[in-house]
Length: 273
Length: 269
Image (cartoon, rainbow over all chains, first blue to last red; front, side):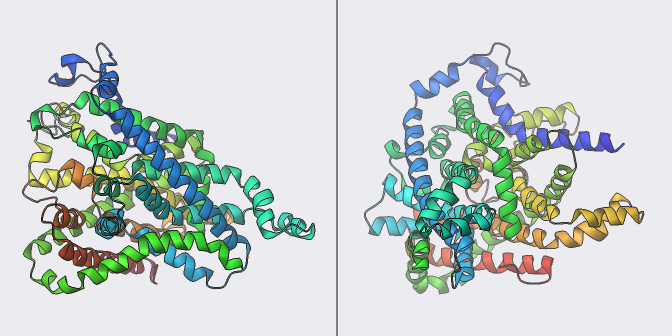
């Protein structure tokens, strides 16, 4: 009885979580007229990769990916660098007003990104940084920094204090302790945090949409959302599904491969907060 | 000296997010009065409140179920936890395109499945009618953000000491009683955090709206953030948009922390 309950619960969880992704995958393989058969076929009758090649040949999808990679990598590096320093201080050094600092970070991180559209659009205009990928790199770094600080503080707190004490007695400075002891020991935590921060940047839509309006600097989510709408009747659903799969498959793979550290880090961070 | 470690983070967050927010408040200051005579704002706020109330309630219920499930000792638990997390890690705007296809009136799988099990007798234009478009928006959001609630509540459940569980089962309390008298009260802080965070984000929902419905049909899914976007990019009214932004941010934080405090019995934020 208990086993049956558990099994059906888990089955529901898997279908619920993966359903839309799986449906996009099946759709992306249906070539020609099969996409528009009524009622829809569930499994592709003659699987084809035409939508995958089409999205690269007929759309600037490769450029969107390049832009997203640049923004993601740049913002992840900056966010992780700044967050490592801050998390080290918050986790390991006694700092006055650290509570107030964490609270201020949390409050700013909670503002929904779409409500930052006007403040940041205005700021980008004033500083001449409209349509600049650098602006989006800095903004994503700032948006994700509180989360990175929060995750890394939890990981750094998990390092045994005796190790750091021993290093201090050996005459290592604080910066050396961070570089040679804390960061290497927290490497899985750093990796999990980097992956999540990169994913958040890869996913972000509202600010990428409003700050980068020229097609040559667009990121993947904005590019895909814009694939629609030329006319209502000509939405290229096959290519859209192929693009959805290519954009989300790396994320699915990363979450499953690194689940131990990602889920562990998230729950440890949540426990602290 | 030690405070220097905080400096890069402080410059990034307060310089890039905090300062523009403050400037926006001052830019909007001349337009706050106009907020009160804006009839559109009232209906947009109502739509947003209804959306937040319905979707956050559903997310809390399903998220609690998933958290309890993933807390059990089961084989491949790590894998199931990762799978449960996946919708949260996927790009909202991109998956919104996937949902648009699922809810397509002619070729959509939602209609087909409901027709096959007999819940529908003819296909519905989900995104073409006000009531069903609102429902589609809620469904996509519940799918997307339930994992966030799950992970927070899972963390909360892990803080319930095992010995307490065992002590109670020795006393002969069944799993249901154990849950209501032991886990639920101890879970209240985690639930309050989840509700607060989710309320703020739901009140600021934008990506799904922009891609799935564009605020339509007949403005039935036009939310506050979508309205803010339109004041700037359709009506080109930066000053009013700034006032609106300030008001919505303040309102969302006040409301969400109020709801969170009600759940927990003391302030969350």
